[in-house]
Image (cartoon, rainbow, N blue to C red; front, top):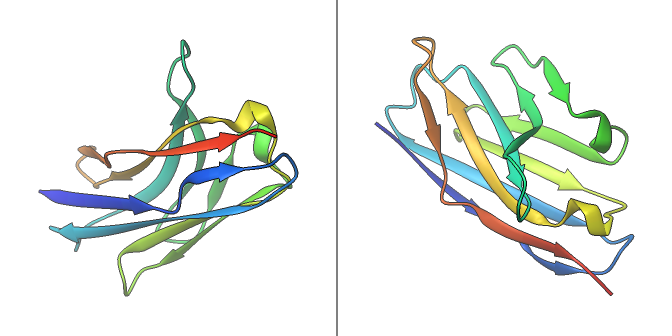
Length: 116
């Protein structure tokens, strides 16, 4: 079992920045990929960005150049720096980890609201 705890969401004005954090605990030895997904009201959950243990990243086109993922393997944590936020970035953001077996775990989600 892997337990994920997210933090850092909130309300920000357009053009502002937020930093999300996710800490993993439990059976973290074999975590492969960590990442962030988001789900806006009435929409499907979508990938924002993922990072492998080797540091490879995959960003959604909509966030390229604005969001940056980083990972601290020693702390079993992943971070999402979000800059130049837009109203369309408003969503619940979920931390995600994938084990080599393919088993996936999710955090409880943190709300990000971009509004003036």
